[in-house]
Each structure stands twice: as structure tokens, then as C-alpha cells.
Length: 217
Ligand code: FE
Image (cartoon, rainbow, N blue to C red):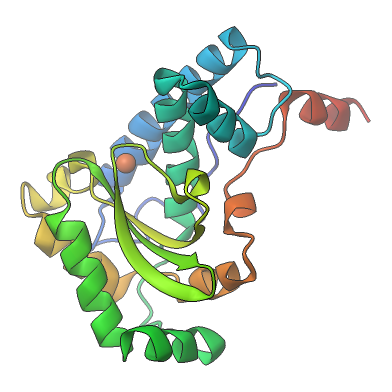
């Protein structure tokens, strides 16, 4: 069985009005799905069926297989992104995460402003990221499908700023989209969990061979 499209961790209308059901229908149901299909096709052609998704991303980068890297990284990035969001319930960073944010950015508001600016000002398609660089929290942005997995950075949170992420709800207004998401629907519990360094595993999918073994066991 090849890589699959992970289910959304909430109902399609659960993030409205900040992200509409229609956006999720297109963004998850069509864009994310297309990356799954293309990754399966290209990974098979590259002889990488025995690799997990994270391994495929890294192998494609290592081989300079740009097409496979772009699709596999987008499959992983989106699988991670959906988990970074949750229905608005006034959530805030707590405990150890809140302390680390204060230490490295001064305050949660300062972090959100930095993430918003970085994501908004990223030229063209890409992703805003909160990562762990060694022991330090850092805000950065990466272009197109690029992902912290191949830069030795630990992923904590991401914001998709490809136009397909916001065009239905916000037209061309990326700043409005970034502000609404960052203020209302960040899954801070998920971000806090990723301080354990295992964020990459949370959007991974096992190797095809391993999955087939599981299915027949
Ligand atoms: Fe996207």
C-alpha cells in the first residue's frame, strides 16, 4: 500500500471562519491529495518503496531529485501543518513552551508578531516555521516545498503561505490570513509536544514494505 492522504484531525468546517470548509476541501482534498499521488508515483520510479516518508524526503534531497523532493516534502509539510491547527477555543502556549517562548522571544505576542511578519513577507510560495535550532527556538521561512527536515532543524509549528492556503477566504490578503490563523487556531498543545524533538515522526508514514507486513500480520 502506498502513502496515503492523512485524515484531517477535525471536521472540515471546524476552523471557520478563520479557515473555511471550502478552503479545506481544496487545500486538503485536492492540493494535499495531489502531492500524495505524485509522491507515490515518483518514489516507485526512484526505487524508494522501502523508505518511510521522511526517508523519501531526505533521499530525494540527497539524490538531487527535485520533483520527488518537492512532492514528498509537500506531503510531509501539509501532514504536519494540519496538526498545527485546531478549532478556536482561546488556546495559549503553557508551561515549558511558554517559558521557552519568553526566554527566546520575550513574550508570546513578540513571537506571534515575528512569525506573522516572516510568513507575510516571505516572497512567493513557502512556509513560515517555528523550529528548534539546537536548544533555541527560532522563526524562519522556507521556500516552495523546502522543509526543516533537511536542514537539521526540529519542526515545532508551520504556517502554509502558498496562495492556495488563503485565496478562497482572504483573496490576495496574506497578512490577514496569517494574523487570523496565528491569533485563533494554533494548536499550542501540538507545538508543545514537538519540543521532544519528535515532530518529524508525527507527520511521517512508514515504509511501504513495513505497512504491508502490518496489514498481513
Ligand atoms: Fe498548501
